[in-house]
Amino acid sequence: MAVEPVVYGASDRPPRGDYSRAGADYTCAQNYAAYTPADHDTYRRLYERQAALLPGLACDAFIDALPSLGVKDRIPRFEEINERLHRATGWEIVTVPGLIPELPFFTLLADRKFPVTDWIRTPEEFDYIVEPDVFHDLFGHVPLLFDPVFADYVQRYGQGGLKAHALGAGELLSRLYWYTIEFGLIRQKDGPRAGSGAHGGLRAYGAGILSSAGELQYAVQNPAPARVPLQLERAMRTRYKIDSYQQTYFVIDDFQQLFDLTAPDFAPLYARVRGLGELAADAAMP
Image (tube, rainbow, N blue to C red):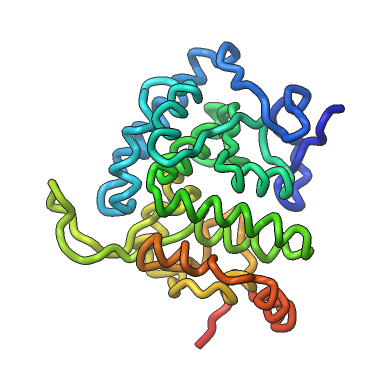
């Protein structure tokens, strides 16, 4: 039985990707033969532009892991990345045709499988795309899955997502994903990193920032957005924007903090958050 396509939030845009290829878990084979020379060139140009922006803006763990993606001049074959990724942290990437529903998404993460869209944006969408494509998913998300602590956090998030789905709290937990895995900032320890003259400070680790040429600099350096220490309750209350730069970013000290924050049972937290109500994306609090 064919699975239903998924759209982004309340968007009326037609779904991207061929969902007729997907199985019941929304995964399918990477259709590598379908990529055109123009597709590979788009990926190459995106990779080159984004990699050049990373120093001083992306966290060291991401920069160190980026070479693990392999080839830069074309779209990588997922099985080649999986050989390295499984050895490093026991994760693998699986192909999906596009956005997938919350329950299969949580299930894949809980099984240490990260869904990666296999289509790539058109040249006209080079600077901005609403839906995640193969460049966003590979370049933005996969490098940090080579980090053992971050990889464990993503699995724990998936396990928590299955519980949240059963409690009807998927939307609350999706905000935590948005403000950490997609748009999180980290306060690196001061001092030079090994082998370079770079110094610590505020850096990006969220995939939505790391894969965006404009938001990478904005999130780390622009004085306009609020940057606050990550607090689960506030993150779950805060709505977010899907079609503009974020107005609030949440900052962690290290990846272990993320892992530790997700250790408790979230059921009492969901009850408290529902009682407190939502916050606007640009809400100011003491």
